[in-house]
Length: 506
Image 1 (cartoon, rainbow, N blue to C red):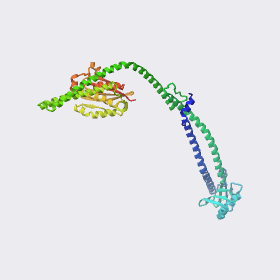
Image 2: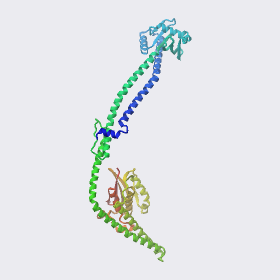
Image 3: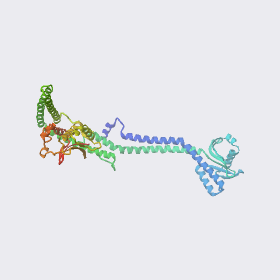
Image 4: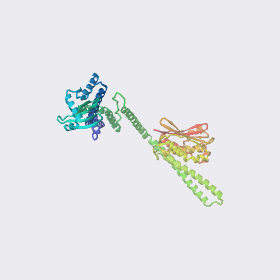
């Protein structure tokens, strides 16, 4: 199947990311242009009128300043006035008290003079002839919109008295404003259409460049789902991006999965070859543990029954009777504990209990256990050391790991000596964390270190008998840690012994 056909098959029912990116940016571009066009249509004319008002007011004030300073006849004033009139399409006229023209910017000075005198002498008649809308009235001026009924033209004009009685009229036709607005909007439409077309082409090109590597990653992931690890991501850009980094990571994951699957297949072949031998050994172990459990359950029942009989009054000496009862029941309890441990060990060694791997905070688990076991330490006058650690999350069966910690801790309490210090430590290294339990006392003899993990092995049989040890606790630790494929062990020191186990943090 070709790449294009796969693409149609996988993305036919939904829009591709290329389509969504292109559509989103084109809609944003069109929406932005539409918004600007609406703003232009609504506010452009008002903006032009405001601009004209400011220009007319500026011209009016310039004439007022020039007349007050006597510079109205200077060449500099003529140049400045000409610049303003040309730039803003303004007409102006200045008359003295005798109605003589002092300055005029247009050829129709007589018409401007007539309009000025109509406003100055008889504004009422002017209102009748023209439609006038007064915008602003000052102390010596009036700003208004004047519509000539004969021509239908509208003017924005400002007239008044300046200097020593000079009359001034400054005006600008509003038709130029409307023309400018129409031209501006028309030009904006053309520019917007061209910009949308060019922008759409650019957006489609950019979207294609961005989404092409994503599509290649998608096809590679589809092959990986089918356990086909031959396809690899190759960067085609001139620079490395996050997508290239993702592609590189996918290549590494693909190689790791391929290698792991090969290893699993080889391990499966080896496992099949060892099944017969392991089944025979397992049967022997099961038979051994079953026999031991069976042999211990019977005397336990007899001892407990005999103890109950003694407490009911078989012996006349109550003190002796109670003493024997306590001894017998204590022994029965020890044997019962041993049976339970043997059953636990049996389940661990023969796979009846699979590890429930989960991620949990080892610091929190240790803290809670040490709090619950604090009374045992106080009874033996033991100093417990455990620093404060930030949360450390590990992978493992939390219930079984707590049992490992319990065996280490109880073993430390039973063999403590000297300064009577127990120290629990956590050390992180690479992707593992090591949990260790150290107790002061005599080191383990070198010839016994290799045997302490065996069932029923006891370094000091007299002391083990004293605290009721069964010699099974460390065997349970071994079975749990090997079941999770994690490291464990013991280290001798001059002043004590340290037991440890390790767990993965990633």
